[in-house]
Image 1 (cartoon, rainbow, N blue to C red):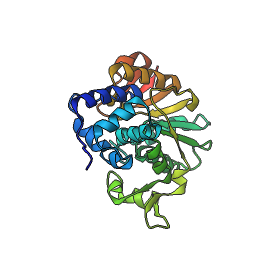
Image 2: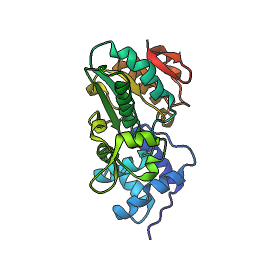
Image 3: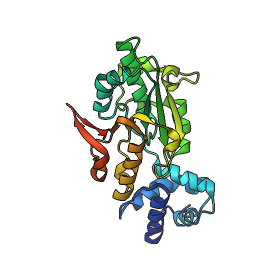
Length: 276
């Protein structure tokens, strides 16, 4: 049986490796997290111990293993319409304002995880259009990015189990935006899926190829980065925003050192940041 325990020496090496590769900062006592995330990879890649696997991936000898490790460490299930207020503000304030500009609206869901956020955005847009027929004639494009290529493949399918569907999705929205596929699984309807394009992106890389956006959702991911990396990411996002573009962060996140690029807009409830 493989040894799943992570020695202090291996944990230190892995922390440094993960921060360099992804910008993610692990605390001093997160061995349990590394152990649980890497356990299945021991069997898949046929390693006798977690320490051996870490040694190989840190030295960069196996690119397939590298991708699997990154997928394992960056994959997190999230909620539908998390915190509610960003989606309410989208429908009640931001989309009405943007609708008058008579051009395609572009929205970016950064670090989209298991896909609930970009699909929640798409559902909100469709609800807005049903409330105001004839608006947003030029269309809305939603770009969703994540580091985990394996997770992105699942996101594109839009298939979710009952546990996932129970996390923040109302019965009405489930009825309106989901259908059973040929295998009997619940799948996001095509009209929702076609609004979202999924792309692999490391937030430590350049965003230039993504183009400019009117709204960016970068929620509940900056908490994993060092202050220096967080500042760089926020400044890069500002560079991709249109004039007066809007950024949503997680409820526990702030703009901090990048405040020179954004102005806080307080709402009731919630808030967002607007590019200066």
